[in-house]
Image (cartoon, rainbow, N blue to C red; front, side, top):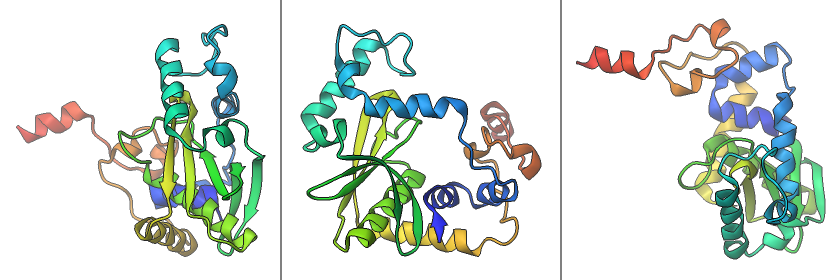
Length: 219
């Protein structure tokens, strides 16, 4: 049985998952908890009388509150996401287990909180895989279909609804197969932006080049 976080890492970079397992390194950075905590305080963050200066939010306070107001107007399950029936729930499914940061009811749906920046549309593939893993585990536990999940980007005041499509499930299955099959270092990525901030870049030995150097070579 695979961990949700391992499946997300496999979708991001299988070689990174190899090094993470090698070093038994599953502890998140210290600033992750503070950013995730924003997802449980939307009501107070929307309060114009409260200061956001010390909060780990990225947009300016007025823009951040406007982003949250858009979510409140757009999302049919906003009240459940603001005040979820269950939080930080350990789910164990047929193939994977891990934490859903929120579990909504009637109908059941998990929510996963990310500390990063959302893409222009949809969600990043690792987040899609993790949300799918949580939805499938919740479905397994409840013995009923779970058709949607949510990925929250609280530092940006953004929440994305994730539908359990056939394509999304296939991506999850591919990540699961990748995670299960790793028994040695997978091939390196080549000149990939994902390598720029990877904590295992030096050990991995992936050669990366800046955008300027790549442009100079193409002239």
